[in-house]
Amino acid sequence: MAMQISARHNYSASPDRILAMMADELWLTEVARRAGAAEWAASVDSAGSHMRAALPAPARAQRFTGSTMEIDLTISWNPLADDGTSNGRITVVTPGMPASMGGTAHLVSESGLSIVDYLADFVITVPLLGRTLEQAAAPYVRRVIDIQQSVGNDYLAGRIIG
Image (cartoon, rainbow, N blue to C red; front, side, top):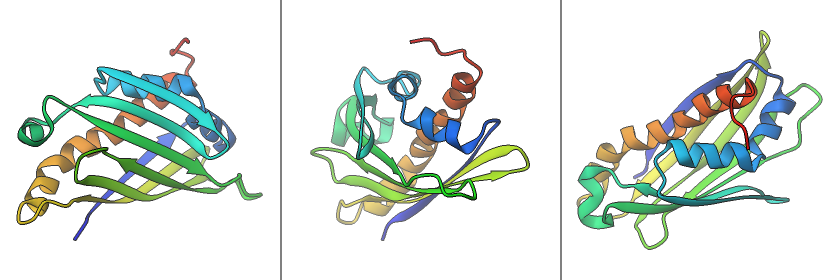
């Protein structure tokens, strides 16, 4: 059974600026850098935003992963609706590892803010240990997700230069 991960990010910008930010390689690159990635590659195409990164593995996972673990992140958004909302899909794959995450994102404008709500299922498929490993890794996964908020704030304030 998968563990549910949720997060809410609030940005002082319009929804169209948020979608543009999340489709900018500069934003993706800074997210990878602040997450401590040893190496990364970011790209954007018609299917969405993609980031492949080698991130430091959580201490409790290193016996399975080594010191780093590779992740492939894809974020894809539907076009902005007339009411300023958009729905997206997030997929995280860990090549060669029995862990993945998939879920949705919902963008809405409220009281001058753009709010992004994430809801995803995080699963580690290791017999007998999967649930324990998910619980151990969940704070790490949330931290990486929340890095997007701080990077987004700096990006929108013009503090990230390419």
